[in-house]
Length: 459
Ligand SMILES: Cc1cc2nc3c(=O)[nH]c(=O)nc-3n(C[C@H](O)[C@H](O)[C@H](O)COP(=O)(O)OP(=O)(O)OC[C@H]3O[C@@H](n4cnc5c(N)ncnc54)[C@H](O)[C@@H]3O)c2cc1C
Image 1 (cartoon, rainbow, N blue to C red):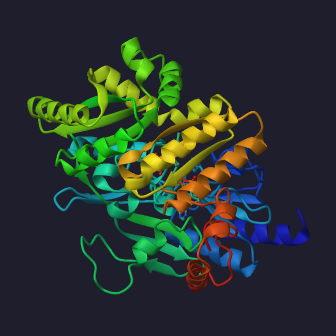
Image 2: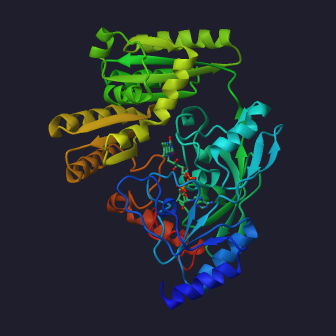
Image 3: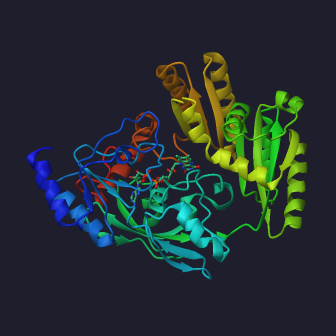
């Protein structure tokens, strides 16, 4: 710690309450959950309790030209919350309140540090829910906004983009911006809310968010379809999504991933051996309705449709097994991490090309001997490949080839986890320079000194 560092930290301590700044840094603040991203120890971790404190922190960082890295739950998978060694982390755990619910108009106003688990619990009694459910519910609304989090339910309700009405931001220039309030429509100039969503903390710090609320499903049925052919699966998905049945989730899990998930969860699905042997991938489809009868009828129609489009068998799971399988799917990241995965890719392609991408992954698996296990939000064209290779360099080579394949198919390097530091090289290597230049200009307008999460994301 240099004399300059000390002067900066002492100025920062002066604008925060007594325990609002940590300079002995607990390990958890040195990283997020991205695989292969080295931890970094910041000079301090600041804990603002309100928006005014956030603005004071930004002003102090500007005065001392010090970078700041916003942090929510630290569950990000791209290294977006990785600290900067000469700057601070701004943790939102003390700004975690649900401020207001308007159940008639269907929105809630929340602080950014509110976790999805706490928001869901608070909404349970209202019959409403915030429909963005990434796999990790200890993530926060602010982190979800910054990454444009998606998850299993996006196929029905969209990602964070479709479910945030407005927000407040302390920009990198220290100004307080209300993009707009809880408006259902907006045709009054550039949509600054959408600009901030997915900006990974590079424009400023989100201090409040108005989220859309949707009806909480009353009755649900989970179907599992077993598919022999990877080619058949996307066609079945397309027919399902065009059927008007409106599945609440539509997840692809290949046979390797399903075996690992079931094993880790101690889950026996009872799929007959002759079906398992012929299956290359499974489709999880959840139907919901206002009562069990209706839900059962919708599930029957969906099962018939899947069987008509290539499913060898379709099983309706009993409720307890359905919950366990969805929970196991949410925990898939921890399962493959425990198995030693080097990388988990998050790529998205137009849904019409998903079979090409899945086949490319399978071909790479056969050619290299590595495991390339796939799960993902196939209804959105968004799949995650877990790579378990004998060496990190082979894993990297496979990742690069899959990225090139996805881009050649008209896809992108991230569908929902963001760029952070982990995907920055891949993005900048392939991105249209005009898009990068425009994003840099936008960042400069919000953050003239370049102090907000430098070196992250697209700009
Ligand atoms: C098991 C597991 C499953 C997951 N499943 C999914 C999934 O299905 N879909 C999905 O989209 N993601 C998934 N993720 C990734 C992760 O949960 C999301 O990226 C989530 O949005 C991160 O939220 P967080 O609060 O943990 O943010 P953090 O990791 O703390 O930060 C993420 C980014 O947001 C920025 N940020 C945080 N708070 C603010 C703020 N107030 N203002 C400005 N910037 C801010 C940070 O600087 C960083 O760039 C999963 C992660 C795990 C571990």
